[in-house]
Amino acid sequence: MVNSETTMKPNSTTSNVVASMKNVTFRRGEHIILDNITFHIDEGIFLGLIGPNGGGKTTLLKLMLGLLPLQEGQIEIFQRAPGDLESQRWLIGYVPQRHEVDKNFPASTLDVVLMGAIGKAGLLRRISKESRQRAEQMLERVGLADLRDRPIGRMSGGQQQRAFIARALVSEPRLLVLDEPTSGLDSSGQQQFLHMVRELQRDLRLTVIMVSHDVGQLSHYSDQIACLNRRLHWHDKSELLEDHVIQHVYTCELDAYAGLVRELE
Ligand SMILES: Nc1ncnc2c1ncn2[C@@H]1O[C@H](COP(=O)(O)OP(=O)(O)O)[C@@H](O)[C@H]1O
Ligand SMILES: [Mg+2]
Image 1 (spheres, rainbow, N blue to C red):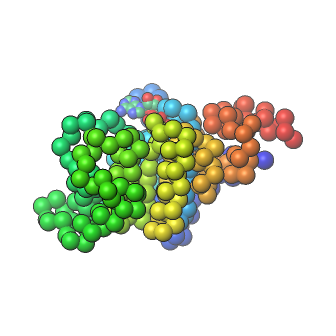
Image 2 (cartoon, rainbow, N blue to C red):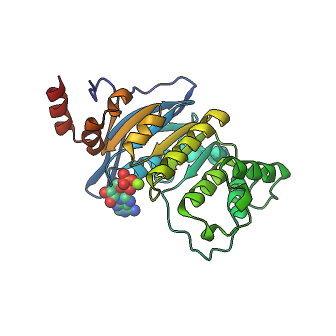
C-alpha cells in the first residue's frame, strides 16, 4: 500500500532529470499554499498531477516555470533555476489553465499556433520557414489541418485546446506542461485528448506534466501520479485503477486515506 513518506520521490542530480523541487514552500500572506514540496521528474515520463481545487497545482506549475517568484527551497528545470531559463524557454511548452477565448478574437487557428514560434525566433525576427512548416505539421498532428484558417474563437473548446497544444509544440520543446486541458470536455472528448497527448509524447519524445480532474483516465495514460493538496503525495498507479480508491486519493485526505489503507489490510 502507499505510504506517502516512503514513496516520496527523492531529489536527484542525474542529468536525465527534467525538473525538480526541493523543500519548496510557497505562502500567500498567512496561508501556506505549498508545504515543503520535494520531487523530480525524469525525462520521458508522463506525470499526472491531481488534487482538489485550490490544492496548489497551478501554483506549483507556475513556480516551476518561473512565473511566480520562489520564496523557499530550490527548483531546477533543465539544470537551471527557473528565472535563468531565458533563451532556453522554448524547451518548455506550456498550456495554461483555460480561459474563454473571445469568439471575435481576430486570429486564425494557424496564427495562434504560429505565436508559439515567437519565443524561439525572437519577437522582432521573422518567423522562419521551418517554424511555419512545423506549425502546419503540428496542426496536422492534432487533427486541425483542415481548420487552419478558421478564427480561433469559432472553434469548439476541444478544438481550441488542440490548437493550444499545437502552439506549445511549435518551438520543439522537451517538456510539455498542461494545466487542466480537459476541463469542459465530455468523457469521450477527454479520452481522445489524453490518447492524443500520449501519442505526441511517444512520437516527439516529450516529458509531460498534466493536471487533470479525471483521475481514472489520467491514471490510465500516465506513468506516475501525484496528488497535491498543499503537500504532495505519490500514488501507485495500479491501485488507482481500482474505482473505490479514487475518491480517497483524489481528496488527498491523508487521514481518510490512512483509514482506508487500514481497512484494506
Ligand atoms: N493570484 C492569487 N492571489 C491570491 N490567492 C491565490 C492566487 N492564485 C491562487 N491563489 C490561492 O492559492 C491556492 C492554490 O491555488 P491554485 O494553485 O490555483 O490551486 P489549483 O490549481 O490546485 O486549483 C488557492 O487557495 C487559491 O485561492
Ligand atoms: Mg489550477
